Length: 125
Figure (cartoon, rainbow, N blue to C red):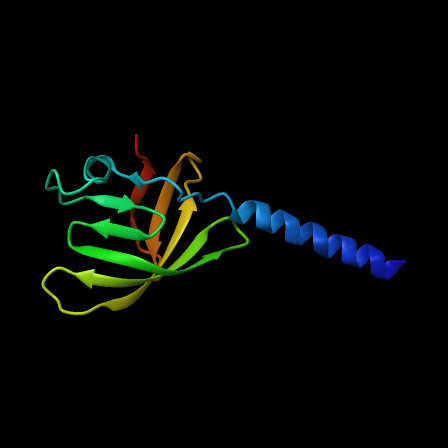
C-alpha cells in the first residue's frame, strides 16, 4: 500500500511539472516593438531588436537557430542554439533560458546561460 502512495505522489509531481513546463509557448512569434515589426523581414533598424520564434532568436547583431529545447520543472524553457554573429564566420553554441515574467505572465524574459537578461518579449500581433 505504501508503494502505491509513493507512486501516486511521484506521478502527481511529474504531471504538475509537465503542466508548468508547458507554460512557455513559442508557437507564435514574440518580440519587443522592433522585433515584431521585423518578424516578416528586416523593415526597420533598431539596436534593441529581439525576435523569438519556435525555431530561432534574432537580435540586431546575431541570429541563433535552436538545436534543442528542454522544458524545466519551474516552467522555463532551456534552449540550446547555434548562433551566427555579424562580422564573424561560422557558428558558436549558446544556451538561453526563456521564462514567463513574474510581473506579467504574457511577457517572456530571455536570459543567456550566465544569467544575463537579454530582454523581454511579448506576443507579436
